Length: 477
Image 1 (cartoon, rainbow, N blue to C red):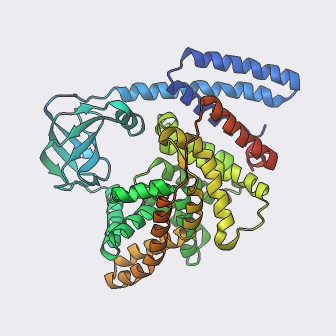
Image 2 (cartoon, one colour):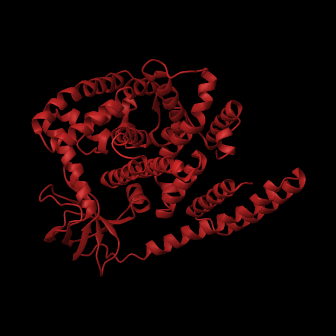
Image 3 (cartoon, helix red, strand yellow):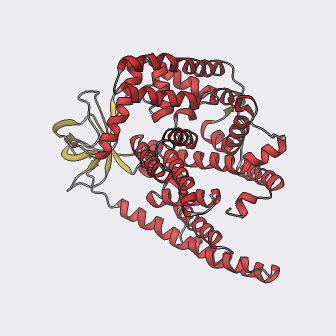
């Protein structure tokens, strides 16, 4: 077994230990590890392969994974938040406020309090990221499914509704400056484009979704295109390609790499560092770093390293973060299922306007996430595949125009207005596709039991094995 294989299985078992511990298992984990250890030793004796002996010892990586989750839980349970008391407290605004019918933002409490709470208050005065604010009122403990989501994925333990503002202290942080750039981009869209088009462009470029009308959200949901405004690996890859095309020609390869790396990291922080964006950014950076290290890009190890980094930051996401789960399932589909489907359909080129490539990528991602989508949302639209194939043809060009529009607006509103007129063309086409497929839908609501889900993914694994023999999985490069 080579070094990169040892690395992969160590990370895999460590993450598996975190996952097992998140279900409250303790003694069962030790029993599982010991049983697996002896099972691998028996396999080594029977098949006479050293591979199983190494796996037997690597299996013990489950234990530190379980201990890491337990320690994380104990550390974050020691929060100093007085619930249901009418008192005063200070905190720093820890997320850019979302503004719809009200303002909603995270507040990181300052000593003697400790912990994160969610503030819901009136639209005015407008609060900003990084400000230190003194409030008075009561904090309620998070409850129900929404409370569980906040606690496990956002580390938010309480909510305060419309507390009384007592004092504001302005604070400028580098991350606050990045959020300011994001606001300038959104302002350029609002001032040069119609409302819906501006909101959609803000969604696909910087992941802004708070300005969507309920009707538009419903249309995207019915057409299966909601993922377009949830920044993902697809959007990050487009950004990397745009940066590569713009920077490589004016500076050396090494300088271009560091500039691109800095911009991507800034973009991730500017857009809120959501799980899907962080995952995509880490993988994009690994792709960029590999040539400088003289090594081939290994998608299998990159995926596991990305998951490890995110789980070390917050081990709760493995079980509780739906966005994390969907993004990784879709990624696995694109990397492993897409080559299998390409061979099955005998596609030898990308087709007119890349329709074949878009079909394979969309179908691969959709097949991998379908059981989870059905379990959470109750069904999917069979026509969402077609809507995505059509709309993905225009997204890269639209994103490019959006970034140009936002940058030019800083210097000339007149020129930016002219660019906005050009940007309207693909935006109108994309919104038209969304509206058409929100009317013409073909709902599918299959019933998945635990056994059914197991058989479903077993069929996916068999398909990949038959078509590719797991060449990209068994070997790291």
